[in-house]
Structure formats: C-alpha cells, structure tokens
Image (cartoon, rainbow, N blue to C red; front, side):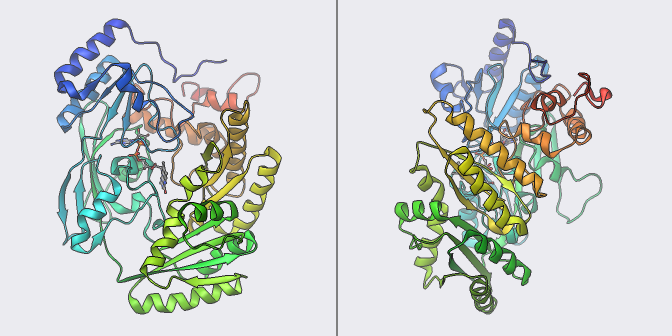
Length: 497
Ligand SMILES: Cc1cc2nc3c(=O)[nH]c(=O)nc-3n(C[C@H](O)[C@H](O)[C@H](O)COP(=O)(O)OP(=O)(O)OC[C@H]3O[C@@H](n4cnc5c(N)ncnc54)[C@H](O)[C@@H]3O)c2cc1C
C-alpha cells in the first residue's frame, strides 16, 4: 500500500508525558481523562462501525483553556479531534490513538438572548433543542432541527452544517447563524461573521460551516432566531407507488409553495414507525408524504387547499389533514422516531445521506430498490424529500460474516448514484471518515487540491482532525477514482497533497 500522508509517526513517550504534564496545568483534574475505562465512551460517534480509543480526553470549561490546549498540541505536533455530543453519523468525531479528543460538552451556557435583534449567543456545547426551549418565552425559535436535536450540540451543527425538517423553507445551519468565535490551531481567537447581511472579504462563516473540525475549534455561536409561526398544520398523503409520491414533491414546489417540512417514508419505514409509536399511518401504503404548512392563519388555510389538490392530482390514494394538534404531533412523532423504529427490524442499520435534484427522485428510488435486491439487503427510506436529501437505511447484521462489507459497498453505490444524477454525497451528515472515498468520485483532483490549500492556510501541520473529510490524492488513486498513468498522479505538482 502506498504511503498515506495522513499517517503519522507514533508520539514518543517523552512527548506523551510532556503533553499530560502540560494539560494538567491547563485544566483541573476532572478535566483530563487518561485511564482506558473513562476513554471508552469517546471511542466512536454515531457511526459506531468505526472505533478507536483516543490517547486522552480533555474537557475544558474556559475559552482560554481551549487556546492553551490547541497551542500546546501545535507545539508538540499532537492531532486534535473536537467533539460535541458525538451524534455525528460520518465518523467526524472518531478519535486518533495518537491524539487528543477535545470535548466541548462543558461549554453548555446560553450567554445572551436578544429578542429585538432575534439572536442568541451560545456556547458550542449547548444542545440544539435547548436554544428553542430557552427562547420560547419570547415567541422565537431556532429553525434548523436535526432529528438528533435533543442531544446534538450547536458546535457540532455548525461543524457539520446540520439540516432538518425545517431546512427546506428556512435554510441549513449556514443560513441561520450570524457570527462564530473560533480558536485556531495556533491558539488564536478569530471572530468570523457580523451583524450585516453582507461583509467585506472572503465569506469565512460559510467556509467554517461544515468544515468538520478541520479548520478550527468553535467556541461561540450567534444564531438567528425566527418568530414562531401563527399556525402550523400537517397534511399526510398515502400513495400506492413511491414514484408517484416523488412526483408529488416536485409538483408542490413547482406550484410555488415552500412547505415548512416535506418528508417521505417508504413502506418499510411506515410499518416500522407505525408498529413502534402508533402514529396513525396507513400501514398498507407504499409511501407517505408529510407536508407541513406554516405561516399566518389565512396563508396556511389557502396552502392546505392547494396542497391537497396537488396531492390528489399526483395520485394519492388518501389525503388527511391532521384534525388537531395532538394528531399533528403524532404524525411527526412517527417521522422523528423512524430511525429507532427501523432499528428494531434488524440487528444493525446503516444510515446513508446523499442529495439529488428533486425531479430525479422517482428514478433514483427505483434504482435503489434494484440495488437493494442485487445486494440482498433491505433498504428503508425516510427522508427530507423537499430538499432531495435521501436517508436510505440499509438493514444488516454485523455478526453475519461479510454483511458489513456488503452494506458499505451498497452504501457507496448509492452515493455514486447520487453523484451520477447531479447530486452530492452528503446532504447534512458530513463526510468524516465514512464518505472520504466518495469525495474522489464527487470532485476532480484540482478541486480537492484547493480544499487542501484551504486546510493548509488554517492548519499547516494538519493537526485538526487529520485525514478526515478531504481525501489525499493518493487515497483517490488507490480507490480507483482517479486516472493514474504509469504510477503518476495526473498533476505531479500536487504530489504533496
Ligand atoms: C438519530 C440521529 C438522527 C440524526 N438526524 C440528523 C438530521 O436530521 N440532520 C442532521 O444534519 N444530522 C442528523 N444527525 C447527525 C448529527 O446529529 C449531526 O451531524 C450533528 O450536527 C452532530 O452534532 P454533535 O454535537 O453530536 O457533533 P459530534 O458528532 O460530536 O461532531 C461532529 C463533527 O463536528 C466536529 N465538532 C464538534 N464540535 C465542534 C466544535 N465546537 N468546533 C469544531 N468542530 C466541532 C467534530 O470534530 C466532528 O467532525 C443525526 C444523528 C442521529 C444519531
């Protein structure tokens, strides 16, 4: 195997000791974990197929401590992986045996709520849902709502550019933040973003959002808040053919309506969710759509009529508007619990995340059904249909020899299918370790080398989450997604990447 540039020499025992001694001076005793037992909870994130123990875990409580920790790692050449709640699904927070895991969990304070400006300034370890709970008395909320919102942190959301049901109408994390504070690997504090809609210079806020802990450690986030809509109402439509449901998604958007949420579930997911939480879903449907409309009372009433009409024209066999708030919540509960519900169908499942142009939904769903047959692995689909953001859940049994490998292969094929129809290999879960090879399919060597150049500008020694998110060109060559002639990479001048 050729040399991966992300591989590094093991730390010497002197360096390890120097690191531990210095960290003891930076954080109090309970802020440093070194014994194996306390390291175990940090060995993986939500993608538990990949596991590694970190060298040690640091849990700072002050920004100045984060500065000192990063400065130290930079001096001693020690890799650093930042971690929020560890709910990530692409291995972004997977630690390195020869590196430290920097947990931001103790930064869990909401620093300031400004109802006039509709912003809140929060520490990175604040849970997503806790923001909406804290600002609810002001009639406000924070729109991006990943299904993991009870647990995941805003720092992790920024690092992954997280999405959720509401993002179709209200945008992803990147559209809902105003300013962040970041500590560089040199231990310097950067203030990025501002109050205006536009600012001079490069848009570093967008660059940092979704940067997966590769460019700096986020220590503060100013989020934008929205007024709670006067009314929200959900329509459930059942279809006897998943392609028709896919068609209805395009038809709703084409009619000029942007729903507050537009989600699809296929038969396997419907039945699993129904058996688990009794949401009131039609068990025999091939697919259902949940279409939420929010806004003023009049607006919602008008949109419901129009959406019901479109759903029927698209071939829905049943169209139900939730009769009351309890039913609306029940319909959404089925959707929000769909992952754990599907988890009950098989010992393991693998959640994929790819995005495609909306209008290609019917054919991509059909192609996935074929792949599922070919690989003899069932796939349940629960996803943000309005955004074209797919979440195929591949059901498998890790204890059956070869099944995990077949599952990963099938997952890779699905992502490549997304790219082939003009989509991307990630909608919201990030690349991490999981999708690093598919980055070679999505991007050309020149684009990848620009990514590396950005990395080098922020982190020349490649200490922040090294080897994640952006593959080396050597890795792509090995993966077979790059044309290598006579053992030479296509751009010899890019050899160092
Ligand atoms: C059941 C379930 C449902 C999910 N549903 C959704 C969904 O609907 N939408 C969605 O987008 N995601 C979803 N996810 C994925 C996950 O919750 C998100 O990616 C979330 O943003 C991760 O936040 P976290 O705090 O857990 O971050 P972690 O997993 O701890 O870290 C994620 C990445 O961010 C980096 N990071 C974390 N904190 C910082 C920081 N302060 N500074 C710099 N880098 C940092 C880490 O290094 C890592 O690369 C789901 C996960 C689960 C388990």
